[in-house]
Length: 109
Length: 112
Image (cartoon, rainbow over the protein chains, first blue to last red):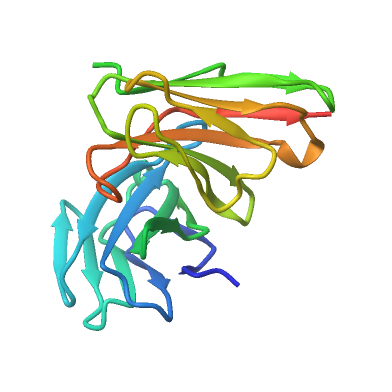
């Protein structure tokens, strides 16, 4: 059983549409990070959220940390082809960082 | 600043052969990590280091060994490769534990 569940696993949408992807767990996180990974490359950190209910914005990307610090969401407004990639959440649980299995996002021009 | 570099980028091994993957970082980070990434499994921690001369086991350490003789380098060794070790291996580093991790470009390893 995955400690961190990401949904959907795959998402393919048209350029200009909005989308939301989710990261959920039954455990409480001390902090949560979102990374984007492009084909053939390593993950790149997008944001870290620490406080329950926290919302952070990065241009067209909005990240939210659940009030109970068990879940998080990533919302993209007006998706562009450059947003294509694998989105990974990672949570600090105990002594280590645990990664979800990711959402593979494809934006169709 | 090169960030985190990994060598080699690709490697094919026969079962039973050995090899070492090299990771180097130029950001003066204390913490370094080795992960493997497999389809549907996400990133899984193999070993990590909290400073020069230290190493610790992660989630999937069996079949791997590591060394951190210099602060900037973290080596991952496979003594006797098995097909189950076919994967993409990523090295990462961070200043604090579980802080923002910087990843290398990965090594794609195939064991036949």
